[in-house]
View 1 (cartoon, helix red, strand yellow):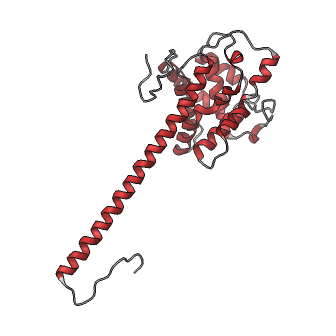
View 2: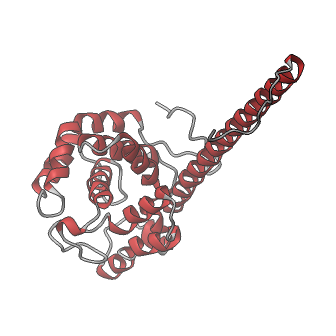
View 3: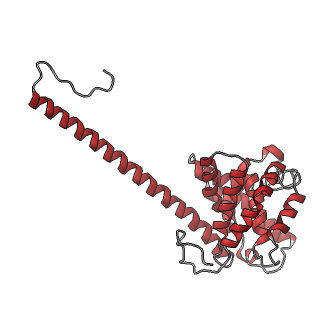
Length: 258
């Protein structure tokens, strides 16, 4: 019989049969315990990896001048957009978890540019526009789906639907879907959070600007999905308001301060 690991010969002996049964049950229990242990360790490794991703994203924020709630906001924006697009649940979760690394390339941008209070000049913008490729290099190429999607987001979130973005001037469907999703999430985040050279605008104000750039900067389908959940975006923004925190405060499991 396929999968057989033991056999009993006739004539049957009750003591031997019971011993064999107990032995096989013990083996089954040991296998189940081992499987449970492997599953538990896998979950622990997965959680550790998420903490490292978020910690690296937070370190990048600190370099820009202070810890904010951007990591939490952007992750939820990506989750909402992915769901509104009708992507599968596991895909939505994967993209949401990969999202925090989208701006990690700014770690390679000179600090005086990141912390400049005024609008950047042409030379400084040239340096700033290098961050998608730097981010892709920092993340590296991986078979792991989470890091693979993080790399795509980092590299392509500044590409534009009309082909005038950077770094590769990809156009339309040539831009990977995660990059197109992140483009909208990042634009909303940038417009509705405090910037050094401008004040934030309302969620609906940001929505109008994003809608106006449908078919130019953004994929029209993703803009359409965004308009369905913009009120939920505003709820996320209100729930995770910015408060500068200490560099050692990296407890991502704790609720955001009100």
